View 1 (cartoon, rainbow, N blue to C red):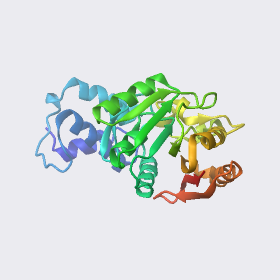
View 2: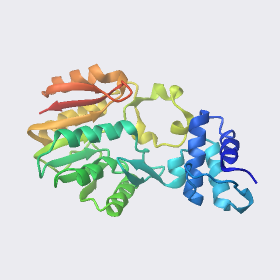
View 3: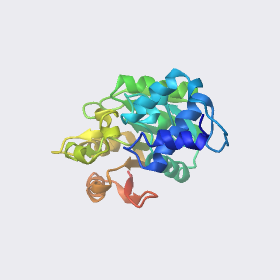
Length: 277
């Protein structure tokens, strides 16, 4: 028998790829998922012999670096839980900031919105549920990702129209948009060596990486097609690679967007680009 804190420390020590505090948080999350135990509870003893086999199986997956969101099949985003799979990126805090900005800046009712490269659907679903009766569309090249996005839309009761589209070769069948938003692939292949293994080994490369030769290909293509899709005065929002802020701003200006801004996230990194058609 161990106390809960002893168990937490012991299991966390078996996750050397993470810092101690993060490892303890991951173990706590796993225990809560399987046993209903919360870290805030004070448990005098924890009997590992009574744990279900699936808990130990999932802990082995955690030990090799698999993200806990994939292990549990869900991840939090903007106050809700989203189904995730290996076909989708895990929703991240920076993207929450992008969503929050769009909600804050666009109060008008009935706005038409398109999200390109939707993944789990976390962006359009959050906008559909938080904004004033918008009309929301979302596209992705991955059929597997679209299946997950549609499930999330159904579970969360969000009115979003999802469809398949390869943005590099096709143009979405929508028009007169007020808002176009995208968190496209933006990591050049050459940066793979700098990435944490649990991202590189488990998250979908299709949603992460672009060619070293043209790392801004998605921004350029979306900005150009945005000129057709957005109504006059409509806004284009991007999540960006912090290293390419100036280049994305120049690209948007050259494409004819006005009021272009590159904004920092809460960690002080340039993560959001916005401009007006």
